[in-house]
Amino acid sequence: MAKKYAEAKTHEWRDLLEQHTFMALAKGGKCGQVKVGAKTIVDLACGEGHYTRALRKAFPKAERVMGVDISEKMITLAKEKEENKPIGIKYVVQDVREEAEAKDEERFDLATAAWLLVYCKSVNELKEMCKAVANYVKPGGRFLTIITNPQMAFDSEGTPKSVILGEMQSNVLSRYAKYGFTVSVPSETPQEGDRLRWSIETSKGPLIIDNYYMPREAYKKSLMEAGFEKIKFYPFELDPNREGFGRNFAIAPFSHLEDANSNDKKEFYQDFLDYPPALCIESWKIRLQ
Ligand SMILES: C[S@@+](CC[C@H](N)C(=O)[O-])C[C@H]1O[C@@H](n2cnc3c(N)ncnc32)[C@H](O)[C@@H]1O
Image 1: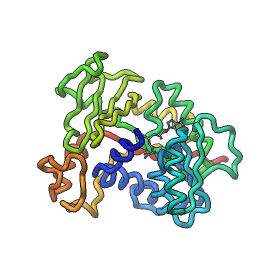
Image 2: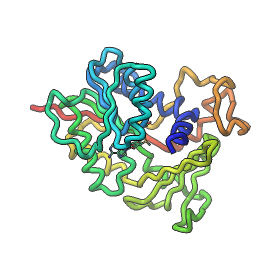
Image 3: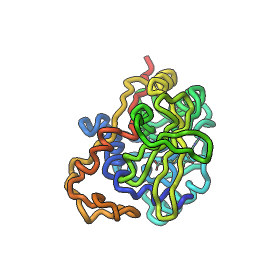
């Protein structure tokens, strides 16, 4: 599983679109337009530390960088990387939801949680998670996350139907297949908690990740109730410096695809940009009066 995860992370869009957008937001506050400092950073649900390391490098002057994950296996992998090449990250095994009331000095200027909120199956779970996340952030600090785009289900009209594990009829969004994944959505009128199933190609078979549908408003409301403001949603952008990127980028395991090595990345990723499968959310913790 961890190996499939690692391979799924090497797909080109993860770098050219996901990481580009997420890190531009982290560094710039508003897609790179404003420089934002952060002396203390926590990466929640850090997995094997992919973004924790990217954040450490993006903020070389940060005094404290920590990665948190519920999975011991993931934290072991992250710690191994830190031991092999120390860059100053502390990793801890922790369930984000179980973080006790933190003291002010223990809170962080910047908290990130790429692909964490997507596991919440109900608005109540989402509210609980957002409150827990807010506890890690200083007043005036920032929270950044990545979610599956709720709009995706509504854009599924006319997509092929299939039955997943005999359970239900699903619309399979195959427009993303050329990027190495598909997403199955329950219907064009999803209900809160409905499953959104990502199937990501790897050389060891597909990596299946289940996320749950939550309306965009529910994310906004849950974050607001947890004490965040200035909540903005950003679709992924293509890194403008690498639009012309060509053959020298390996897109295993689907380099057999005709246009996978296209020199015109903008054309290749147009469907991705027109129908964003994921969004970043940026929000700020309300300052104390
Ligand atoms: C899809 S991975 C994302 C990893 C990393 N953020 C990234 O984008 O590369 C989701 C991670 O969330 C972690 N996770 C899920 N629920 C959690 C919780 N309640 N507290 C801490 N980590 C959690 C999982 O163990 C897993 O490593």
